[in-house]
Image (cartoon, rainbow, N blue to C red):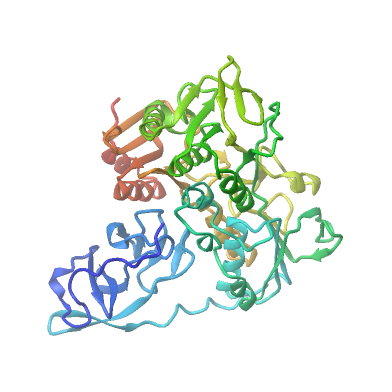
Amino acid sequence: MSDQPAELTGLDFARDGVPTTDLLDGAMLLGRANGESIILARRGTDVFAVAATCTHYGGPLAEGVFDSGLIRCPWHHACFDVRTGEAMRPPALDAITAYVVEERDGRLFVGTPLPAAPVPAPLTAPPESVVIIGAGAAGNAAAETLRREGYVGPITMVGADDGVPYDRPNLSKDYLAGTAPEDWIPLRSPEFYAERQIDLVLGHRVTRVNASDRRVVLDDGRELRYGALLLATGADAVHLDTPGGDLPHVHYLRTLDDSRSIVAGTANVTTAVVVGTSFIGLEVAASLRARNIETHVVAPEAVPMTRILGPQLGAFVRALHEEHGVRFHLGRTVAQIEDQAVTLDEGTRIEARLVVFGVGVRPAVGLAQEAGLAVDRGVIVDRYLETSTPGIWAAGDIARWPDASSGASIRVEHWVVAERQGQTAARNILGRAEPFDAVPFFWSQHYDVPINYVGHAEHWEQIDVAGNIESRDCLVAFRAGGRTLAVASIHRDVGSLQAELAMERHDEAALQALIPSTS
């Protein structure tokens, strides 16, 4: 994560311009203008200029992919419209600046900033009000999108946390490692919501949804009526019934308060135990090692994350953590937690005064079940993210939707997916009839090694590798029935973006060319 501007390199597009013939169709050029890094991009006869830095974590857009009028960030797959600079896909929520481009004497020059993108056409039959249950990725993206799409009615977002919506992925990464200050964590300031008249009801939970009369009841007895309702309740950490699991030095990580508690618990601690080899668990292990805490990881599987990444990548992840001093106890479970020690099932005793569980999450579907919505390992939604009850939508970790790519009904627990679903749900609340067909994407960071993943593969028949996993330079395809279901990558950002594009277009030939099949 970085808040530093991109380094100014290349020609000065404002002062000197660039020969028109230097910019080919479909290509980008990186330069500068008026003290800012700028990208020139050509599509046919049209030339565009936009700021070169992603508004999410400061990714270098010139190192990404330009296709069909969109620039895609190489780091976390945000998309920007080169015509307007508008952020078209999360995780970026803010636009980049777009500039006037002029051609003079065979050279292209960057001029003044273009005005902001126009407000969409007036809404024909908007709901009287919108209530959003959940102030996480999906809920926040929905609220922002409603206003961006021109909705002027009341918006109320109810969240159990005391603070404004925040950057949940960072809780197990830089913030926990001590390399990101807490003021980076909120997605927006309180003033942002006030200016847009988004009413935040924080530190409270909805206890009941009455779908028949479009009303929700809060834990303090208040009632809120809605014209449209979005369920974005997310997921809850799985808690194991482990003896000693309720001791004060035992933690689960789901909220900002959880992360704060773990940070506080690292004081004067020399050894910690992480239970579970989920992405959260191993990111916690990496963050604890960044604090020079001896870290032990305990899990029942033989290879970390095999279910998601397969045996080759799983073995690589284990070796990477062992290089940084993590000690694994695989094929083991925790039998007992005491004040200063953890005992494993075969009798090993680890002296540790900090324990963190990272054993997965469960979708928070209780409200949906009690309201009579269709639920099956998540809240069932249609391609527009509407539930079985008209007027109620669901997005994020709880939503199980018909995936256009695989044809299966899937549920995905990833931040970017939740944000993208929140945007789509908001547009459909406003009657846009926009199917959700984005290819799932997530990223995980382990020390200086990023792992990006596009697609969704619950099962596969073969794994193909382009490049070399051990060299930290690879694309890994997960395939079944002659189709590529998902692609993981390490330091192959452009390849990851190309795989995402091919999946969006259902272009298996392009995926096979990118990662040749071995069968």
